[in-house]
Length: 252
Image (cartoon, rainbow, N blue to C red; front, side, top):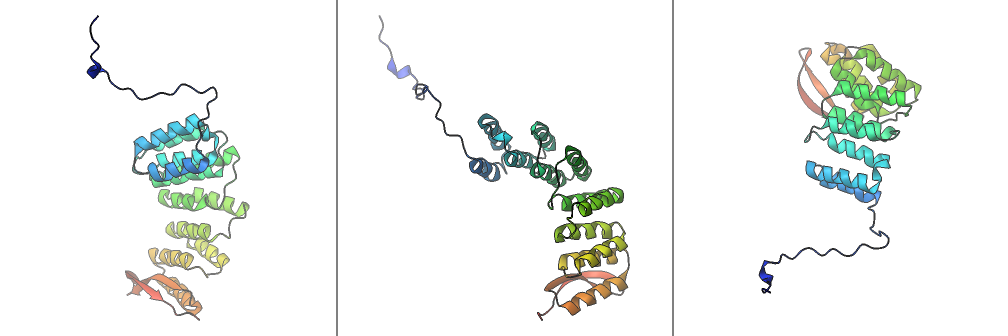
């Protein structure tokens, strides 16, 4: 019998014998979300591995993890809206967080029409929208020049009692003002009390876009009288907005 040449033996990794009961610790929701938010923003390979881990550990049933997963796929660096939609199709009874994630994902990938389409699917599903649902939808309607859909979505905001939220109102003002519906935009501003800088800026921009310089000046004077923080406005030169300037009003 020949002598065994031990130099040719490759050392294999140690595999412990299987335990009678699998005691492998399942990562927590917090751990999975941390992986998605820190390890998967720049690496599609890491995202796919995280996706596999989520399926293996049963975390996909967690709506917050499922929503975060599809949001990662919608990262503009990957441009994988189709993957996000595939994830959505596999989520059982998506909640508002999941729907908001896909709507925002559509907007991040410059798919405003798809964002509105996802909203209608959300409505059909019976999931109740919240205050985070509507600002990106108003922006989507602005980009699509879809005033009809914008009016309908605004009616849903009122019906749900969300028409006092400043972020929703600001987005609504921007939509109406951008589409030339200045009366509707001003009605929203009056409802909120002309005390929000962002909303007033949106209204002033709308007036300037459609050439109503006097209305823009009047609103500016109102804000000046109220001395509300810092107001970013268009400087009116010869009846047109020539440049931007920051005007700081002193506190009362």
